[in-house]
Amino acid sequence: MTNQQHGDGNVFVPHDVVWDERKIARYWDHLSNVPQALDGFLINELLETASEATIYGVEHSPVSMELVNRQFAQRERFRGVASAATVPTPFQEGYFDTVFFVETIEHVEPAQRLAALRELRRLLKPNGLVVVTTPNEEDIEASKAICPDCGARFHVVQHVSSWSANTLRSTMEEVGFRTVSCGPTRLRPRRSVFGLLKDRLNPGRLPHLIYLGVAA
View 1 (cartoon, rainbow, N blue to C red):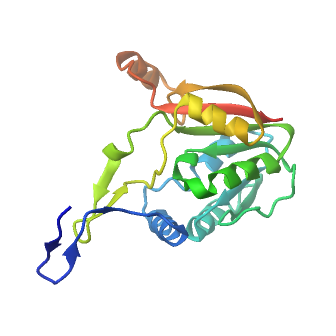
View 2: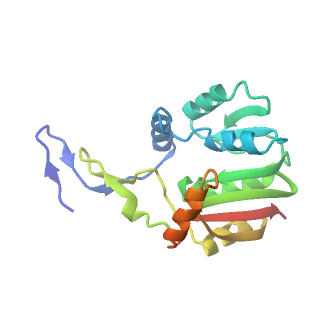
């Protein structure tokens, strides 16, 4: 590794970012202000498709929490987003029939991962359903960028772990879930003829994993 002196006196030192609570919060607060950010996406899907369900959410970023609460404030079955910056979350034990952990586990730092997953277990009623999705065997290094100012290397959407069907299943079972199914899939917001045709024409490795488990 070599250091390169910038004209302004700053030293360029290539290095991997060490994510901590402050950096994670700052990063996602920033993305929450980007117009194409996906805040509220799953909540909107559930409000549109799960016609009898009451929908709650949790969010690590205070900025995201405020935006989503404002976005869906007038929706009848929406009960608001609470902070998940620390666990336990404000909900009582065994409160939910179903918990979704969608495209999230890959963002959780290893030191906090088991506590976060045990919180999912705590929130579910006996035999309640957990749904977890994540990229399938993602090459983390291939999606890293480097800051041209300081040399920090980081995954462009803050992924810190890569998962296979085996590692996802074993981790969920470790925290008290009984596996119903776990395997590769292709996630799309809505099924369409175009989407099905695209899958037929590009039959390579499926890009996502989906885990279904029940609170044992």
